[in-house]
Length: 213
Image (cartoon, rainbow, N blue to C red):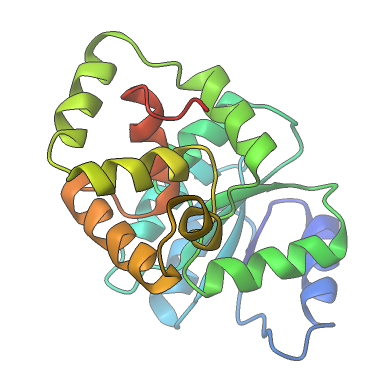
């Protein structure tokens, strides 16, 4: 599903996605409210959601979409290189974000990556957003540290790497583990931290002081 109030942007994204035989655009929406109606009416696996829209913005829409019984994975789209709205969308449950000037092939790759259950955590971009708008300290840091104490030492190591934007393969290589074992650790980490995806887990890691190299 493509969600954007700019009809030309929406059309361009739909045309781009249509070039991939493995992807099907099942819905379009001009604001968050329309997106919720569309997602409730049919199965949507991935939603590309703009941040700034009328009626219901992308941040509110992300939270509502992720709360559906069969929630789509959400990739936030933004015109801005670094924008507080992007961080807020990630905290609301988005699985990542893309800039609207991202190369077309990278947009297609991102949809596949998110559909497979991974997050769009481009290391440099993710660190920029998290570092600038989620610097930790105060109650947020204490809350994060309390959550992290629920993890085993190995899970804490995995979380620290996730906080830096590492993929499962990169975590496996760094810690000398099988990728399937890393996936199992990540699942347990998400459950223990009471978060829904890797992006939110990375935010907890940063608040707890685990994200720095």
